[in-house]
Length: 276
Length: 326
Image (cartoon, rainbow over all chains, first blue to last red; front, top):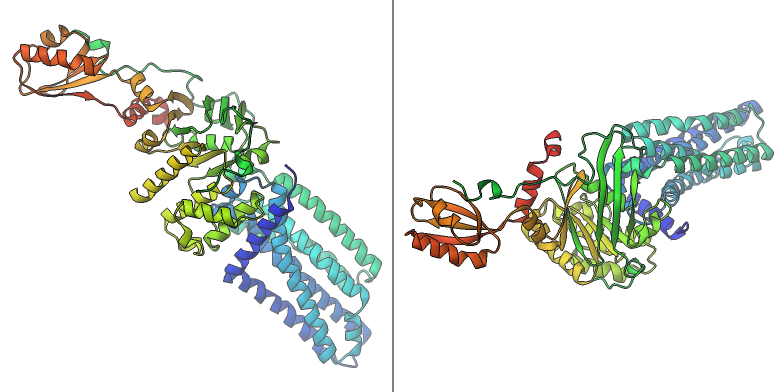
């Protein structure tokens, strides 16, 4: 039985329906981006017309860093809930009793997180661009924000950073036994790729199309490798029983001989026969 | 009722629905079940009994390809139980776990749509409607599962198990926590499944349920202790007997019963009651009555002593050292 996009879509649809029905999840996903929106806008609006090029570069770098923090951080908590959460609410076993393959389940879950996370990241980016063009006092800021490499970096990095966070989060979720631990570890795991973004944003590396593409390719490869690792980590047996499959040991425990049929005395049996 | 037309019912003809040979599952040093062998015919309702921790659920999970056996072999719905065959086996079976495991924030229909999608059904509406109708839940289809009572959730889980029209249906404690009316509805549904030729593998603690529904039962306590029809099990463990009650204790019961044709043995039970072990209660009872009357006894009653499956179960389990170790 081969990989089925139909089953993947069924998982994705379920994920999106659950978000829609959960005000808490939707609320936290909506509130956090506001922070990432306000901060860059404040930075951009504070730059006056006479501010130098270095200050503009730093401001634009900070803005992009904050914009890329959103797709990296937003999915981490949700992704790290994805498997252990199903397990805790008792819905994982019924899912695994169907023909669903682990790759279909994992990709469905990942898409369920990446779609809203990247969508929010792109909306934030669009709002920043519009606000900068309408209200920024420094023309150089508007120009820098609209540069091709920056736009390309945003388009490429948002899903790839989200992918990193999602796969690490799902991997942690597949191995964790507690939702809280999984979510804390998931949040921490989204930090490493942001360090790379920070280096670019603060011009430690000069942003260019080539650099953006190279980093994007590195992240893409990392995402694919992570997907493979997470698939391997997804141990159906461990998730259902809490124990890994093991080879038979010589111990054996307290077990009567296999196939033993014990003699069970009949009630009213021969002991009392023709006596008393 | 759901029509028996989906791919779930297709499979090798004339092969057993379940064939299990020396199947063993260990978790490290702990043995869940060992050297279990049995066969279940297509269309049979097979009861799987045993105390808590006996390995019933682990057996279901193993046969349902959720966990891998440590050793032994099995075929499920005619397909060899291997990790490669997992998705194909799961396409032909359904498992209803003890915990319904429904998405509380989704409606009943949305829960069923998910599972129908996972079984690859492109137009699931007719099948979902039929499954809901089978469990009398048509009117609650748009309710959130979180708002349903435990009994209703159990019925949703049953509807979910019906969606792929399985060749083999594993029901793990399907009436656990249900009130008598809801349990009766589940029983009726299982009877309906048997009439349609669905093989049902039923684990239960309710012995009267197993006796009422199952063609055969197996008693598991890490190893398989007994397999057979409930009446076979009764006969294998208990001699058939007559219960005699007289108005006053017999002066010399040995003289009466030892000389009566067909009475194999006897024992006193209470002050003026006697249990006679006999081969055929209906044939021997008149001889016993004549002997009692001849001895001047006032006979109050003489009845065939009937042992239930519960007697069989308790007889097996109570004497089992495994139980006391748990």
